[in-house]
Length: 293
Image (cartoon, rainbow, N blue to C red):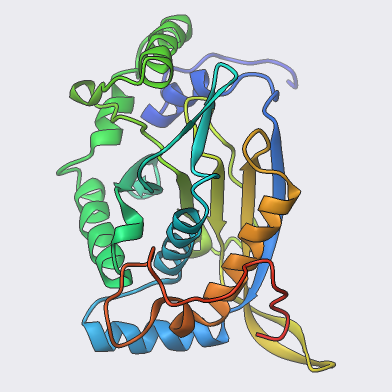
């Protein structure tokens, strides 16, 4: 019969954690989408992977592009807490990981991501994600599991206390499985492996990341090139922004930077030399139109 419910305690660690993270939709967010012709990127991934003996993916390119953007725009790499703004000293990228078999969520943090080369990003991410999926070392999963099994009201109180301790007092709770600044500068998740062609991520209230990027499936789509409609491998990046930290102009800067770097990754990250992505080789103003790239 419709409208009847039976409470269940058979929930995942992430569901227990999320019961606190989100309540009513009061977040000041901006949603946007970036469409990128991935023709050059797919060729670049193959060449770079062979040259440096590392398996690079589309997600790694997006992570590198996001890290490079924040390195170039430190005024965006901030958090808003209690009406005050705090600038991060590091560029840290948090990546959601499904474990095991897509039954739960955890994550991998790449600290000082702008100081890593694309090869380093690919190697570090793959190594840590494998540890998480094999349940050998899962800091975030272990931390979230602490809240599983408790009543929602108690979980709420515990996480409110953790939220205050981390975000207001700027303290470290890593010994309890909750790392300092646990979601870093930007959150990235890949849903393309599941065949998803369009998606947007929510900004958790516990997080203070100004940007959430959803990497979707690369799909052949109609693309206008020199006035002619052609088929191109196109990827849609779903973008969620914290409007307290980013307005339309800054959102446009991010969108154009993603288009520039992914449309021409050789120019953005180089090919033969492992260059820190924060240094990069991309020149020019990211607000310059990139329709011709």
